[in-house]
Length: 422
Image 1 (cartoon, rainbow, N blue to C red):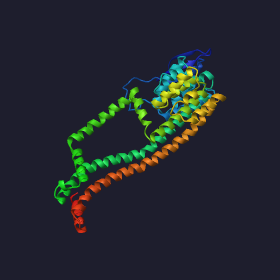
Image 2 (tube, rainbow, N blue to C red):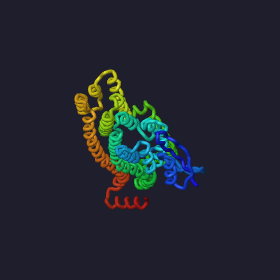
Image 3 (cartoon, one colour):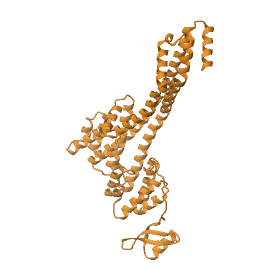
């Protein structure tokens, strides 16, 4: 007969835990109620054995989609009057994410121990961001947890939508770029050397080839050498690893983000995305009742760009010293005047959360337009690059043929030899 662990509430409100052997969960519920206990959690005790679970790369993080579903469902249940502990148990049992289920097990245990929901989820920063934790804490303090959770879910959906659109817009250009690099490598290492040999025979020696053809053949010779191949196979991964490690350092992250903000086109998307995210998150935190300094600091950590993050942190310090957020933000180069003006209106009317949400909606549309614009520019540029590479090789090949033979018949004969050789 399987063994079950249970957590139940006595009539006087005390919590009682224990174990019981029963045929099923229903039998456990009946047995507990017969003892005048109200069941809260009933789980079958797992038997010992070999753990066959395999953790895949990235498998320790909760997916954004699963977190949004969880947040919306929790908001609905709490709004319906279901206690938080029972809500967490219900959502744990029905979630399809094993990672989220494991996190919720720990959260439930913490809540059972008397901790608040915000304190319990704060132990899992890999699943719940600082924004999520602060908003839940503010919702608990104000007694509006259900409304805060609904706002959280909406904010997460918007943030995820922006990231998805940017990634989606970059897929096609990335494929074209990869194909271009692969095609160039194949042409230079396999095709061009063969063409070079036949051209030397047709023109009477490599020294008589045009300068651009000789440069192409020399580049091909270098790319075929074992030293070059070894440096690519070993050097490129090493450079990538070192660069990624450098980017993780505060100095490297700031330098990299500063560089991105200087690139034409890229800067426009980064700034608009950061402003949209700032407005959405800051507005949500203010609506939840979070203090303005804490809201600024929390939002700064979620911006995703170290340069703009530093600007917000500087504003936070000035606000702590008694300054106005709008006036301090006006001094920062990456926040457009419209954001400052709307924020100033919000401070004057006391409706900062409502006003700043309008800014978020406006800049989310601007991000869509900017992403579509840069995508439409990148695609033809990559195609032109691919065509230019092929055209350069074609000119380098057929140029010497046309110079070696002036008659159409001779040119056609040489082209036929070349194609037969290749």
